[in-house]
Length: 378
Image (tube, rainbow, N blue to C red):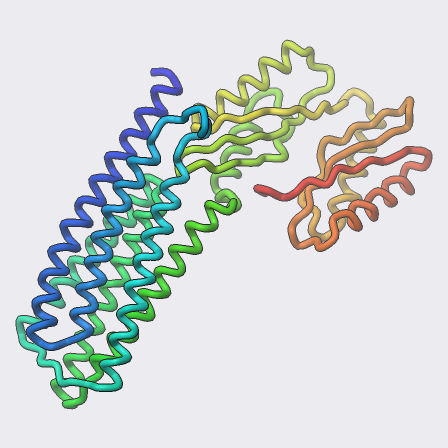
């Protein structure tokens, strides 16, 4: 099986798993919504009715997840050569807005209930239904979130987390029933308001997470570290730097990186090595990489010592992640290198100028050029 065929197969497995999980979520939430609505109407409990409404929004969210994954798998075309994978993030944004709106509407109704309270009646049947809801939601939440993490679906992870949280919120209605039974005091509106606030909070968190991906979120350090480890393990690679990943969906990305290599390598050997790096990353991570090179002179001992000294001077400054790509031309007295700086450094140019002066003082007569790299993935 070729790399492309393997990637296609993996994508199909992911799509089927997300769809199957979403269908299970729809069935479970519709079932719970019907039971809760009936119990809430009979008991006259706004908290239970609003909890049923929350289940309906969860079911609708699962429908959107299915539509999102279907549209996201549309093949790349002339107008969208990177594919349609980011539609999954937009589907998550839509889910977040639905959850937020449902929470806001619920909050309004709960406040009304607090202002003009009524006396809900919790029967044994109502309590049993709530208990069944709690257990079902806990199981559903764990399953959906687990599938979301396994198949890198933000929509499923959000739905699973929301379901687990719903179980706790549903259990809170039992507190209202206990207070009503033993204290003869209605806290139904207060419980409803608390549930509503948590729904609003969950909607905002889902929205911010999805928007982060659309805007351009830093890739997970676990992935970038593993990519660098994979590249550094390849024979001939002396260092891996400048890793950049462009996300076009949960399972679609392209990127670029630089590798340090022995400066004595031939063009043919370099070509073979860069292809080896590309194939290794594509095989393991399904990410196509553009590979650049930095030539390192290990035969000239003076240059080796200069390179080590320049690295020490650069890294001595707080916020400097690394120094790489050091190129020394003794004939023309030129030194050039890259310095990766963290976002904690407010003025990169000022830091660059400081390092440049230190290197020029260490090596009088040399002109120094520094390229400031952004810490995209370290």
